[in-house]
Image 1 (tube, rainbow, N blue to C red):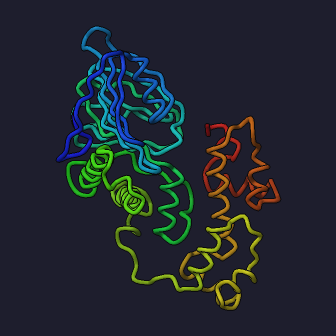
Image 2 (image 1 turned 180 degrees about the vertical axis):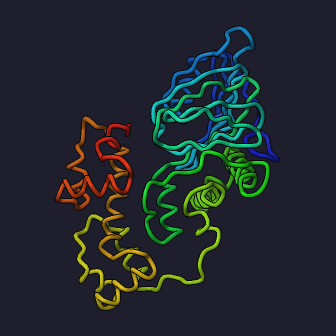
Length: 346
């Protein structure tokens, strides 16, 4: 396996031991013939896992992993040389497998088996135990881990309001044409540039826009309830008073805002602010505050260690004083109780 990026190359790494790695900060070119070493490397770069050969001795195991971390994304060009199977818990992140060759047979959360091919990539959800039944020895895949909170925040920023209900991406992505093919090519080029070490992809003036563009592109390519709204945005733009309030709430969601205070920030009357929010955001100002707080709670619960924090502590920290109402609103918004989110975190 040479390049992560199309139109560029990363030199193969010569190794003298069972495993080897070189690369710039945030990037890694890893080679090994040891299954345990490969499992550990994928655990560091992606997710904790179990890995073993499907048929021992049929093909030599020779893992080649070129990976690069770009903010909330990890992009990798991965192959194993031999057929392997893997199992994971809940990923905790969105994940795309786009084979350049070969196939990957995947099951998630008790759902039906799915197959990633060079024509159709698979998008996996953060929730649900994941099993990779067979990663074929001839499969070289673009593997992209996408931070769940970052993708949801990006969708909120593009929509101008929190998306209502669970945020799930369609599992299949056509990568033979259109937005799917374009996004895969773009991701590979960005990763190739980042692996070059001294390229602009790591410069602070370039890195953030690149990461934002990758998140934007995935939201335009993947199936989800808000894709049409992103692909064909309306002509109307939110007025300045609404934008001022939304910015203030996102900056300090834990603050005990009142409708009167929000109206003062917007520099309009309470009535005018409520009317504007219903027209341009689809909800009331205080409901918007609650939705942003719920997102922050979920983000913290996913990152927390269950033994070190409780749901009530996190909820209180983000302004939810009544635990019963909080739990009901959390379940309504995310489709699961907050305690489950905490247990499925780290």
